[in-house]
Figure: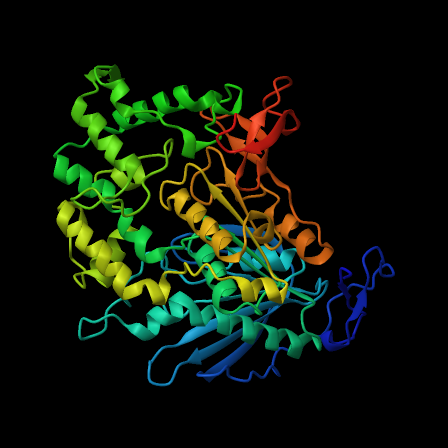
Length: 526
């Protein structure tokens, strides 16, 4: 299918836009702002909802400052029509806003919808503005909830989980956003988008997977990075480092934690055939932290000795949560990932809030004081109560495959907040369900990024959206993703991320900073 460009002649409304195939160009000066009428947009309520309001405002563009806790800025945004549709689900008392931004001129014929982060269901304006700047019509929803760390909506006045808002956050608001945004685009431009894409990382990544699982016709392409799938499990699992520290009555210093990561890097750096300051196959790094017992490290000018107790804590954190009888519950912190987020002086807000408010129904619960037994009970409770609502772990993607959709994911191998192996586990379950690696590769590809932290390849450091577009629109499936990685010395290295289950390995000659000197080989076969 051809790439579409929207060209607006002076004085011609958007509904009369002219579409040019790839390679064509408009006459000089023909792309000018049309007298966009943002006051006539009408929306049919998606099933199960009621439209409370529709507001339309023509925005001049310029600099967009991101709202809320994540902040951020994007400059040079062209004029756009800002359409906000507020939906409610009768009986739930919610008010979910869907925002669609439509460039006044130069629409590329595509929709790009955005997911959220932590407990924010949608974009704060920076993603929308960036998409509009690139010619997309862009959309997002707040699902009727709050900002990234706002969890005041978790429980209702009776102290029970607000099931309506949780459904919004988990699933239905993103689906409704896709339906509404497509209506708005058709109303404004007089034409539906030729291609629709979803773009998200973390919570947004989970939302992308949920779209593929439950609403396979919403998007042609889904870019879902560092996805928070297996939500009911990993959210509780990432409280584990605090539980270990509490139960072992020992918290290594930040300097000591770093010493363990440095030792692991030293031991596993050359798994890819060259010492380059990266662990390229973290899942096969079998460094035993007990090897560091008795080692002296200097922390803030003071010499300290790594103890057996320190090594025991690190070993349990890397291994991941287990029951008191030793049964493995979930995956641990990846070897090489920063300890400070989950094993610092206080529990990380996101999993702490989930465990306390949604699972225990005690917003004031200090999860850093849990015993091993209490932790295991809460883990099982989270699975039982929330897997079908927000687990986002259904491996049956047959409907998405049948729809022709494409799902593309990268996940950092040093992600300190969402265990990388949880994403690998999901991918492997999809393979078992749908006939193996090659059949799944036809529509779903996973790339693991060495040395990369949570959502750490933003800002143009990876060609993921471009690769997804080529796959969807031209049938060119990505064999690799080109990315800029930062090694332990702070040096930028260009790498071609390999599609799972392959990993990158040095050819034996050439500059290790150059991706051309590496090839993709089966994991563990170096």
